Image (cartoon, rainbow, N blue to C red; front, side, top):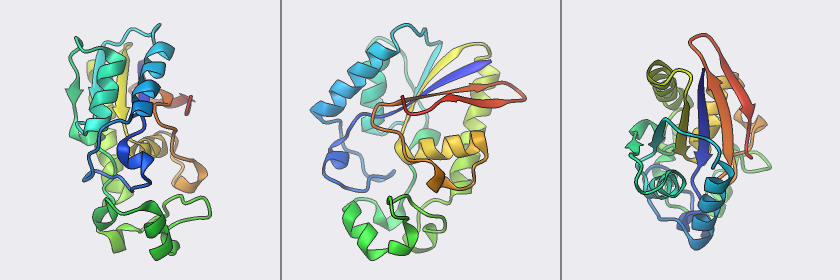
Length: 196
């Protein structure tokens, strides 16, 4: 089976400043984010990765480089970019929550159909990309470990795809630099652990 060690990037400048950061906002890691990435590198030091694939956005690229090492080849795959929040990208999160409360629950989890107002991605669009990526990784790296570095909401959609939750408020976004492990075969998808 293919083991995907899925890591959210470390804290970015936009995270630290409370800015909604989707696919159009590209800020680097903070010093805290760099420390988080090194801590994750240490936590995964016993795993030998056959492949490293990451979002091309700077915060994920920096995280992947720290964890994998500067001498490793990293494949930057646009299917791993963060969810596109449309015209909300770059706004303060608090402002988005206040202006569009109908699209958030009490814990500020994004609710479905926000794209009708924001012009951003639909969940199905992102999950179709994830399904294609996972299929490619299973075909190319059977019985191998793959490091996947992506973003909070995109990782929620990955796990929705794996588990078939279809209600994203049942799962919080993973913490910065947290690891989730998914095992894939041609016929099965299993979440082994989440947000470690």
